[in-house]
Amino acid sequence: MILKLFYRVEFVGKKHAELSAGDTGYIIEDYGDGNYEVEFSNSDGSTRIQVVINEKDLVLKSI
Image (cartoon, rainbow, N blue to C red; front, side):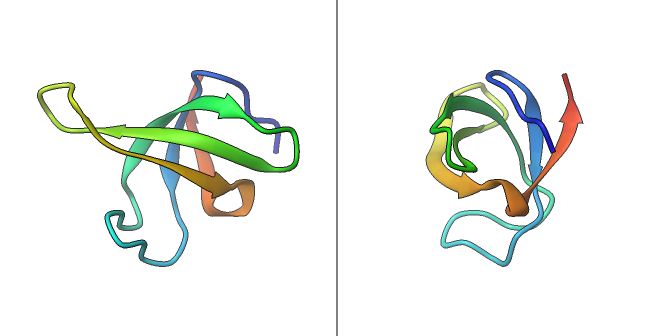
């Protein structure tokens, strides 16, 4: 899967401390090794969590 900066993605991995499958966020950094920093926000737009996630735990939602 080709993911790029600012793509909207869905977390489909196993439960994370602050994430559940289905949570949606935006890629804000590509580390070039299959890992991406993704920002997940609250409904008011404030950042809930920024976390590095492997591409196998992400699904493209929209470009």
